[in-house]
Length: 482
Ligand code: SF4
Ligand code: FE
Image (cartoon, rainbow, N blue to C red; front, side):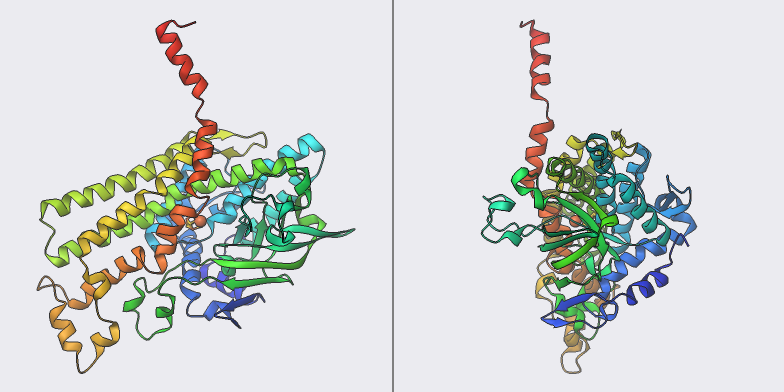
């Protein structure tokens, strides 16, 4: 079996036995939990679109190992065209879900681990790459969703992993056995973990010899004993437990993040892809970050498309669409959104071959892409709020709209243009609220800031890649300075 349908994917998750906590209580069936379900629906979209002939080229690809048709989310990029198609696929999914669809983290982790394990084996004579390839084929054949886990809690940011007061602030090896290792620690902000079959864990920063036991990469099923998932709250999340769908803003889709604790988790030898090789932690981190920074030039643009569409629609419904400043603001939103896309495409088409044969993005351009993402969605959101009008945060609830006593007032006074049903106007306003301040704002705004690394992390990479010496030489050449 190569491609799963959305339905089969849900059933495969249902069979898993994850330890998930929401509001302090263990969740018996995460698949059916009203707060979790919209995020699952977003991942289902990555399976459903892959079944549709019109999206086949973007969503599916031939495995470079088995030659079988696989979902692009389990693919190792084999050309600049693959890198470009990845970004296009992510834009498409952002457009279809208006949220984070979560499955990219594992794809980015796989691609980073693929070239890094190859380099490690070349230099050290280890056999990590073959093990990773085996695991990759397993995930391709079963069409699994794999989560990539990088970010440790980090404790005191001024101290290295081994110098922390609490040694568990970075995930580390606590025991080496003949058949594997035991690890302890946690990964924070873990996107889509509850909707994933497997988790691929990587170190979070570059390390030195003293941090050896922290330089560890491996994969385990998400329901492995000792993995405890504590679901992250999002603004307005309990609206998903209310009657009616209006106040959710985005009734069907969402994303999720969680704190994932590894409470003495056993990892068998065949699933270990780094075990103490601290000198390779830096390239693994840089490559993963580079791939995920590229990703944002696709997914955030797709969500931006929906926000721009909602803004244009509410201008229609409010009767302001002909105002010249409204038109101009929508042009500005489009300009910003497409600028994000430009960098996503550019870092992809400028991609290069790695020693392993896989393709990697242009790191400088990927970091420029993400740096833009830390800013432009905020401006796009600001303009959306400007055009929507204050009513998107002062509007009565769906229960009021349906109330016998006051519903007719809501219907009457929330009317915009006479031909547009009040309820439709309220729906669009709630979607704008969702994208700018509600649950989707986690994915569209704050994640734009901190996901794939906070702004300063990109500035460090931009400075490393900016090749100032070369630029100075250009000047010397022009001016004949020796
Ligand atoms: Fe994918 Fe974007 Fe979500 Fe990251 S933030 S997992 S790139 S949709
Ligand atoms: Fe992310």
